[in-house]
Length: 288
Image (cartoon, rainbow, N blue to C red):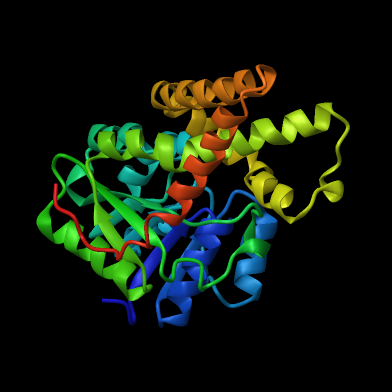
């Protein structure tokens, strides 16, 4: 379905810019919009966006597919406007890191039948158009979360688009997705952030860290504009994950205070066993 398709990308940061580049490379005519005019201008200047859209999104009706690459709260806020601008659009999809609230908002906006929530489990600590790259989604895991009324054809179209971009696809219920991401994505980000703030308070600069420390704090460089809405939207599930993490940190601290070398060693060995114990899983489609 890719060649000669008209696809609109709303938001041209890391995710939106990367999908625009990947689509352009496959012969798609890309319509684009970003409220930051400098990012939109750069995308047009590079020839990636063929038709810039204005803030009213008036040209959206000509797109066969619409991709919303915005923070979670901005996606929810823009959905009524997008719904009112659609023509014969076959698929509307967002790239947010939480799905339950967005899928519900799409249903409420009356476009549930042609909507699929998508979450690419990939990214970078860098943000903006300049950080985007056409290869970002290659070999990445993409979670697709249909609404209760998403049609079979709509879901198949979403799958085919991501497979064309060489990504692996899994279909999940939106609520299950958010619960899993609290552990698989959101907890690691907050742990990295907590470590960064702890090091800052101790007067340790990032430039003073070794490779391991830099790896551990890389996620802390993620965009606050993107991450704050994620944490707020998935707060209950994230709080549960953080509580479990706090228990582990407390236990190892108590072992060190008590001089319990066996417990400290057991903690480190358990982590190493987890790290070495599971090969990379081959991506397959799961059913709801």
